[in-house]
Length: 80
Length: 223
Image (cartoon, rainbow over all chains, first blue to last red; front, side, top):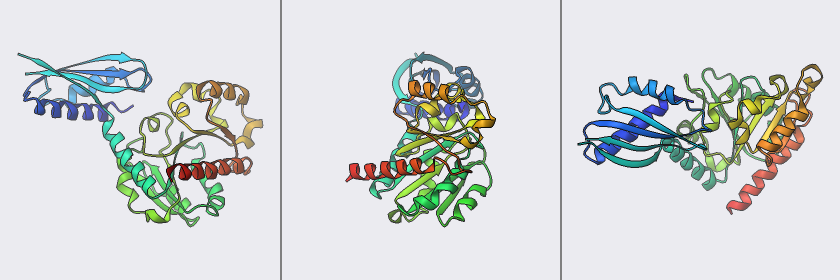
C-alpha cells in the first residue's frame, strides 16, 4: 500500500490529538494494523523515521499490533 | 511525565469521509456509480467502448477516467459522445475519493443516470480506497492467468461482479477457467462472473443487462 501517504495521515492524527491534549512532545505512537491490508509495518516505520523530522514526534517510537481483518487505526499516542 | 491518549482513530477516515460526500451527491442526484478496476491492459477502456453504445440507449452516461498520465482513455470515450473527465494522478497508483470529489461538479449532475469510474490500472491499491461508488467491478483478462484472484485477493473479494475478458483468446492461453470459478466461489460467492470479449463482443449483453438491472434496483431502493 502507500506507507508514505499513510504515515502522513498518522502524523496528522497524532498532531491533532497532541494539540487537543496540550502535549508538546510525542514520545510514542501505536498503530493497529489489519493483516488483510497490503500494509508493511516495517515500511511504515521507515517512512515514519524520515517524515517525523523537525516535528513534535521527531523522537517518538512507532509501535504496532497486528489484528485480523482490515482495520488500520492509531491506537494511542504518548507524550508530555 | 509522559501520559497516554487513547484514540482508536481510523487512518483512512479522511478518504472515507470524502467517499461518503460523493455517495451523498450520487444519491441526491440519482446517479448510479460504478468503480471499474483491473490491472493495466486487462481491457477496461475497450470494454467500455464496446458497451457504451448499448448503455446510452437506456441511461444518460458519464465517465471519469483515471491514469497517471495522458488523456488517451478519456479521448477514446469522448468520441462515443459521452461526457468524460480525465484525472491524471501524476504518480498516485489509484484514484481516491478526494480526487473524485474535485471533478464531480464538472458534470451536470441532474442530467446523469450512470457514472462509470475507470480506475488506474492496478490490482492492489484501488481496492483499499472507497470512492463512494454503489458497485465495484473487477476485470481480469484470460491472458493474466487464473491465479490472480488468489495472489491479489482484495480487489477480487471486494468486487460486486467479475468481468472475465478476452475469452476469444482462451484456445491460445493456459487459463484454467474451472479453477478460477472454484476459487471465486469460495472467495466471493455472491459476485457473478461474466465471461466476455471486447473484441469479439461475446458475453457483453449479460453484463449490460446486469448493470441496467442493478441500476434500476438501486434507484428503487433510494426512492
